[in-house]
Length: 371
Image (cartoon, rainbow, N blue to C red):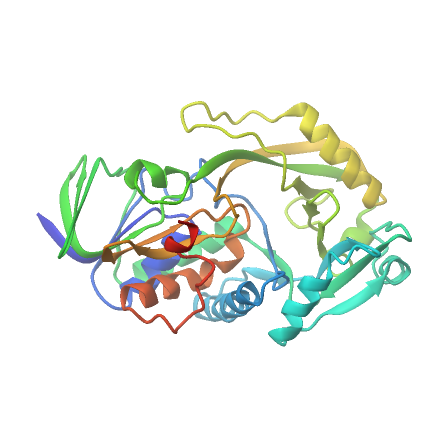
């Protein structure tokens, strides 16, 4: 039976990052049940929002750590992964919905400006913000090239000596006091340590995790733009509208269509019933709201794609050791907002396995705190 220092299950952004970090420390096996860079999970596609802007300082500091590591990965690989566009969080005057975000950014010394609706319209004419609105502008935000980022992390892992195997599902997992043993169609393997980063398939491997995980089928739309000059990345920041929770990007992947989505309202699915079909009615509603906010963006859907969200009840991640088994780390439940942290998740996994509890503030992400 083959034996490794560590095994990583899953090659989305979390698993790829863990593979790269662990491979710098020992012999690592990385298992993917589908093809590498497949489109069945949560890490594929051309773009994800990167931002520091959260309403909790712990997220802000973790995003800052990820920011440093994305830049280091770019320098190491020669790939451009993160395009800085700045980011807008759009709120409503008098509701205080932006106050916790501004406070958290300030506490972590991350730069932010508060803008009136008129200031937003003048500085960023891609936005038709009503006078009852306001915004926070964060210069550190931008667009991550998602699939390219995962591919770069996997190459990084391979360069460090990791053994990568695709189309190799785990059919049995046994966790012992001194290690783990896994069965795959090509044979049994063992390791001293294990990282489970299996996304929507986490419950299939760890049915007694202790944190409910709900899988949603999410969709993103590419809407036709009539005049893209104000929607270019150098003129249009990424945005999250806190009224209705739609979000979107400047022109990035397509020359005449920009990407928008709705964080809320996606249907819960099982892995068996999940389809790749777009909900046309929901897409029309998202397109209408986006076109009202963004002058020059039509409701014509040029293309639509689906992906999976794996959500926890509080939408905070699971980043923790498996209770009673400190040599097993679980990274799951990223709830549709985890990709930006990808570059630091490998170092988080290593810190958890090494018992370095002071390396990162993970107090939001423990299994026991959900009990």
